[in-house]
Amino acid sequence: MSKKELYINIDIETDGPAAGVNSMLSLGAAVFDRAGAQIALWYRTLEPLAGGIRNGDTMAWWGTQPAAWEEANKDQESPFYAIPEFALWCEGISEGHKLVACAWPAAFDFSFVNYYLWRFAGRNPLGFACLDMRSYANGMYRVPGYYEKIPEGDLYKIFDIKTDDLRPHVAVDDAIRQGRLLMAMLKSADQGWNVDR
Image (tube, rainbow, N blue to C red; front, side, top):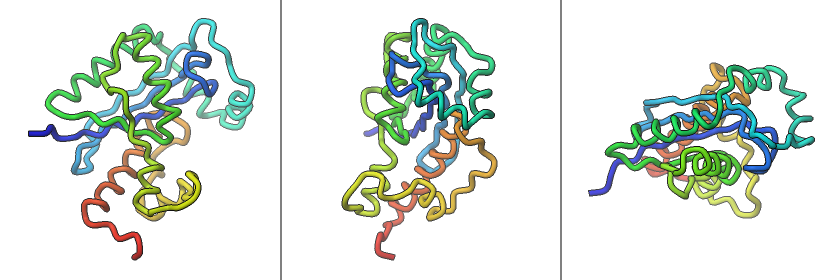
C-alpha cells in the first residue's frame, strides 16, 4: 500500500543565484496534507557562507525590498546547526508519509536546499526531486509555448487565494502562499478540472 502524500512547500531567500557560490539567507517550509490543511511550519534565517559571494544584481534587487532584507538578516543562525535541525524536522514530519517537495521555481529553490542539506546535514530527506508549481499549472491549462506564459499573480486570482496576511519575499510566508495555491490546484484536479470552462 502506498504512503499518503504530504506536500512540503519550500521557499528561500538568497544573496545570489548559485548554490554554494552564494548564500541562502532564509529557508521557509509549509507542510500541507492532501485535504489541504496546513499542518506544520519551519523557518530560519541563516548566516552567510564563509567565503560566499554576494551577487551584484541580487543585491541591487534587495535594495528595493528593505523590509524583506531586514527580515532575512534578523536572528541569523549558523547553517551548521539550523540545517541538521531542518533535516530532522523533515524526517519527523514524513514518518508514515511520502513527503513531496514543491517550489516555485523548483530548479532555483531546491538547488539551494539540496546543497545545504548535503553539506551541513550529510543527507537530503526530501530526496532528489521537487514538484515545480509553474510546470504543474502549465499542465493543468495545457499551455503551449513558453514556460512563463501564465503570470503567477493570475493563478492566485483564478483560484481565489487570499494572501493579505502574508509578507512578500519572506521565505516562510512565501512557502505558505505557494502551498495554498498548490493545494487549490490539486483540489481542482481531483474534482475533474476542466480547462475549457
